[in-house]
Length: 326
Ligand code: T6T
Image 1 (tube, helix red, strand yellow):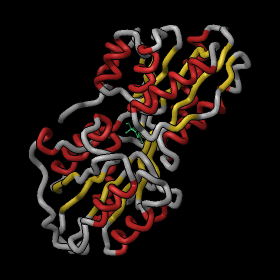
Image 2 (tube, helix red, strand yellow):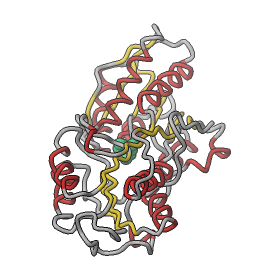
Image 3 (cartoon, protein in one colour):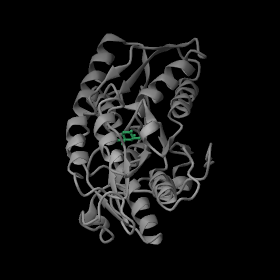
């Protein structure tokens, strides 16, 4: 089931330092990657979100195992300006390694480059920049393949019915969800009975996703499926369908496996989830940063596994459910 397309991957992390407890230190590094600097920092896309929490859990455990400390500095919203503040705050006291999920594939380059210029080893986890040369390693799911998997799943669920399908993306400039949306719409062309509507952006806000679903249902009475490219869009889509009394009539395929999505799969709000392995992304992110710091071979690009989960197989796949705390 679980396949690593390029190399092995392992555990991971996000924030909620208090919840995850232990392991973190202040920004007391010796600066400029000085010998003996064993501090790593993780800057995820946003705080208190199960994908990144799971990533942090894996990263923190791996850092501890390898004799490093890992601190998480998370922006309050999935927003490049807020994430830039976190990156800039590393300031004159840079960590030896920075694991970061850039929230904008272009705008985040300059601040990350500044940190790299001070000697910090950069590892991209999950999302990536268009120009990834600043990073020693980049680790993510095969998001294109995830979108294709979602298209195949919705086509199977449609069972030959004809109709239109809505794709909900997050924010322009988010590398992962853009790849999922593109993978989905490309693959859907293989099913002549299904027509993809124009991709809608939701700003990664559940309320906006719900509103897009309400509007799509009104404008497209033949809507048979929705692909929600991440957790918040899925949550909003489920709300939109519920509000319209269309839960289960319009199939919903979501990405990720947060506790609320898993619950939604169990109670019929979702028909399928494409789960990532954020713990593995975080663990491998630490491994690659440490390899770079210790002069060992570094793998430039690593692809983590994906798992398609349905109500029928969910209990056998609970290891892929995301965490709320470590
Ligand atoms: O889907 C994940 C992540 O892969 C994506 O880049 C942003 O959204 C999530 O964090 C889920 O909310």
